[in-house]
Image (cartoon, rainbow, N blue to C red; front, side, top):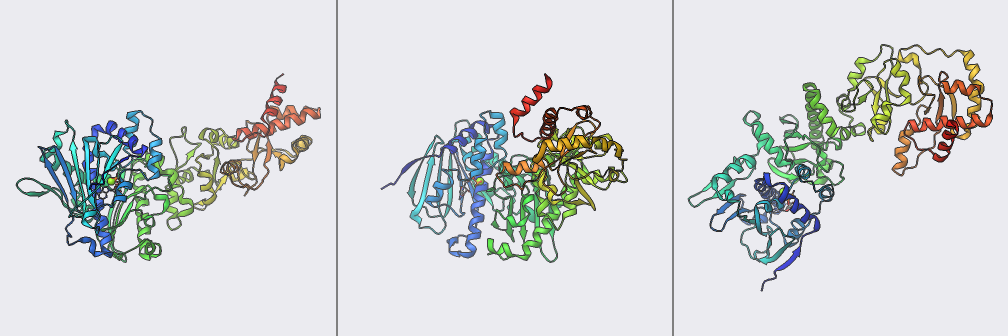
Length: 615
Ligand code: ADP
Ligand code: MG
């Protein structure tokens, strides 16, 4: 009796299917790469599980992928003798989308096919790509070690539902039959399949064999690409291998391939993608380094192999020393892994140095894609801190658009001889940073200031205190010692100071608890006033970020600095009406707060004050 059962795809699967069939049509041959890659993964998994449970081999240790073409029936069949799937695994793996990153990816889709096609290229399309060329797909699978009569047959026309039934299958592993659409005759031609396998899957470690009437022919080289010597590998092969490990459609930006010998022996083939993956900031993102031990695949999300701030790197590390039965727990403790991690980190940093040296433009492209993540190294990177810091890039008052950036070394080379610190300003946006009143005196004297407006920047500067013995200093904090800038202080004569004292006292009284202090500014040349934090206190910008994140923020009051040369201040000095002085003082405070991106406590009051002033 058949237990055939019909089930619905999850909504997201339908969405994905629809999108794929329509927007990937011009790349339709990728289905073969995806299915072969799944077969290869399944064989990797078997090889790994069989280390502990040799019975899973079931007497058949020659792992292969076989391809059979049938012109009469118009079918293309792929057969692997990998790990296979249980009934539950079939339902879970190819009826739902479990990976939350994929779901959020789907939510970003717009319905604009050109844009969506570009997006989908950033993410592994996988099994469902079969439906680009087939109008019916039958998958029969038996998990290694399961009884012969507990195989499962899954079938779907890609139309929202699929059927499942229990069948008997002697061989372990998975057979996928694609019933090709009318117009897909090309995929019934042996030469076409040969070409595609060579192009896309040559580096796959296990033999891909085509069954023809006469004989079986192995189509690929069937050895691990990374184990070959660099001279033998073409750029094309490197690029295809990247697409295989990363599930990316686009070419990598750069790669590094090396065999490391010495205390630790391992091979690394690491790639920097040319654009960010869709789940770069997703906690569940699958880490991109595959760990192998002597060509045996061990695990994919080997997060111990590279620091978190390099999580955009993709590739393979193959160790000659680790035990084959290495587990996640062992990895956590392993000194060998620590050495590999250190070595791989150095390699990536050197690769980035090379890119930066080779072309500013190319490095900027890298930085636009991954700079935000790279900066997380502020807290994480200790062993290679200098190397890391040299690779940082920042916007600067020295450049006129937000798309360019400078390195800290560039900054140092332009510092005034007497200048003691690297100056920066933080703000919510590049424009806000660029126009910050705190920069006025620096602009006047041509002193460069780094403009930090990334969310992580506040955090970066809280961990990065100095670069090549020069401290990093916020222009919005503390007393400005202008002689340290290498410029003469604008002489605020004591006499003038004395003259301003009554006004400062009046403003101080008017603002009361709102400010810590009112004083004459050294940084302003154009604005009437600005807010400054004490050295060591958190900046207004960081305070707002923390509050937005729902964090407790220690209360620190700002200092109001006034510009004695500004007409508003000279005018205010002449004012005798106490009520007016109070209103004007509040206005000074409020406009300073707005200028640095802050939010007013009493916006309506501010508007009223402005209006009164105007009339
Ligand atoms: P991905 O390979 O990125 O996980 P796919 O859509 O290609 O996504 O495959 C989904 C899942 O289905 C795989 O993770 C795997 O668990 C399972 N699967 C697909 N093909 C096979 C196969 N030939 N043998 C065993 N499992 C498979
Ligand atoms: Mg896949």
